[in-house]
Structure formats: structure tokens, C-alpha cells
Length: 296
Image 1 (tube, rainbow, N blue to C red):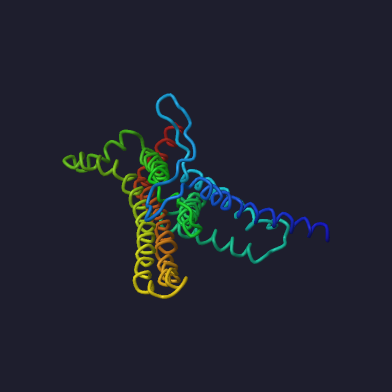
Image 2: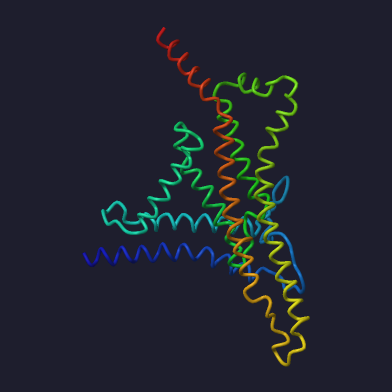
């Protein structure tokens, strides 16, 4: 029993370390690869490597690496939250995991209907990946959600799902949906293409703007502090008093609240677009007709 308990604790420690190590690795890369600069610096993701390719070179950027690190951390977080759940030893974290699963399933079913109840893991993955990616800024790292390429990839994946379910009733029915009414067909086509673009830019723009505003406010407060307290003797004149506490309070909104809100909005739009574009009644009628033909 003691040996089993020790093994259980050892596995728990391993999972916790594997949750933290990817973040520490990203911090290490940030420190090593960031060039020394002075003044206000607002730039995109660092480029770690450039891989030669036939058409265009593949850039390995800070956003891609941080996104991969977030996925690894989430994987081991899930393993930690569910570790020992099959052995009958019910822990507090298992209760938390059960609540999260039930809430996600309830939200998915409530917004998409019973037909899409299997979408709950996908929606949970979107929420977790988006939220934790935005929270990377709390560690001084470049949040992957500030890179339009990362969020654009998510939006394209969602767009493929939307198109897949819209075509469940056949290509003809999918084409007819753009001509309802006929005069609005060009606008309907533009609206269809604009769906992933709007999803990507909404998420990316809100997260990036929060990061930019945070940097500008911190820099401005440093300059204001120097103007007010610069006449104090010794190190007191150089100490940025106004940058103590105030940026942290603002970070609660820009980094935490705004990041979590954008993750929720992206997940909600995914559910509404996928379920809203799926002609469920027509699909059920088509299935009944196929069954009737098969009997004949």
C-alpha cells in the first residue's frame, strides 16, 4: 500500500513538473533569444529559426513554440486532474474535473443541441488552449493569441467544420443556401468567406491590443514617476514608484479578464456557427428517405 502511495505521489510530481517545464523552457528561450534594446519596444513574435523550403522558408517563431508549450502543459494538466480516477480513490481534483466536464457538456448541448453533444471535448480544447495561451503574458512571454497566424489556423479549422456540416445534405443543398434569396447570393458568399477572417481578427486584435496598451501604460507610468519623484536623492529618484501595483491591477483586465473573455467568445462563435449552419431537419428527412429506399 505504501509502495502504491509512493508511486502515486511520484507520478503526481512528474505531471506537475511537466506542466511547469514547458513554461520555463519558453522563458529560457525568451531570455536567451531576445536582443538587448532600449526604450519602448513593441514588436511581433521572435523568429527562432528559418527552415529552407521550396516555395517559401518556414519560420519557427516564438508564437508557435509557446503554443506548443501550452498544449504540452494542458496535456499534463489533464493527466494530473484525472490521475487515479479509475482506482476508486476520489480526490478533490477529480471533483473539479467532473464539474468542468459537466459544465462544458451542458454549455455545448445548450448551444448546439443534443446532436452535437460529442463536440464537448473539442469546445473544451478550444477554451483551454485559447485561455492558457492568452495567460502566457503573465509570465512575460509572447501570447500565441497575439499572432494572427495562430488564431487564423484555429478559425480555418472551425470553418472546415462549418462547411462540413453545411454539406451534410449534399452539395446541391449547400449551393442553394447561398441563393436564399437569389439577389443576396453575392453577399452570402462574401459573408461565408468572412466568417473565419472575422473570428481570427476579433480574437487576435483584442488580445494584441491589451498587450500593447499594457506596455504603453507601464512605460508612461515610468516616465511620469521620474518626473514627479526624480528630484529625490539617491536611488529614490530612479525608482519607478508609479509602476508598482498599478500595471498589475490593469493586467487583471487586459491579460486575465480580456483573455478569458475572448476564449469564451471564440468557443461560443464556434458552437453557434457550426450548429446554426447545419440543416438538421433536412438531414433527418434525407436519412429517412435513404432508409426507405434501402428497404425497397
